[in-house]
Amino acid sequence: MGKWRYKKEAFLSALVIGLGQITKGESQRGLKLILWFYVAIPALLVISLYLSGILFLAFFIASIFLYPIFWVYSIYDALTREPK
Image 1 (tube, rainbow, N blue to C red):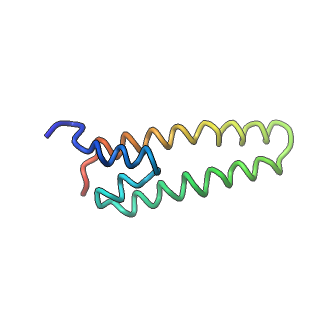
Image 2 (cartoon, helix red, strand yellow):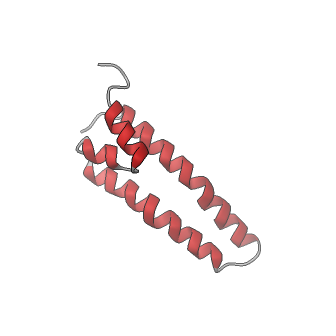
């Protein structure tokens, strides 16, 4: 098979982060991605609201940049990684 044989799983990961990994049988990896994307990064955003000055800006920008990075990583991982 080719390098990109998990197209369905990549599509599912594009819809819900980590769902492609869960579909391939890597449920622990998928759950970690779900927790990071839907719990940890939003928590970072909430924490940034309680900070002031440059710390607010640093936390806010970091959390905003983490969203698309995790999303693209999840899709790429579901598309190319072989299940163990």
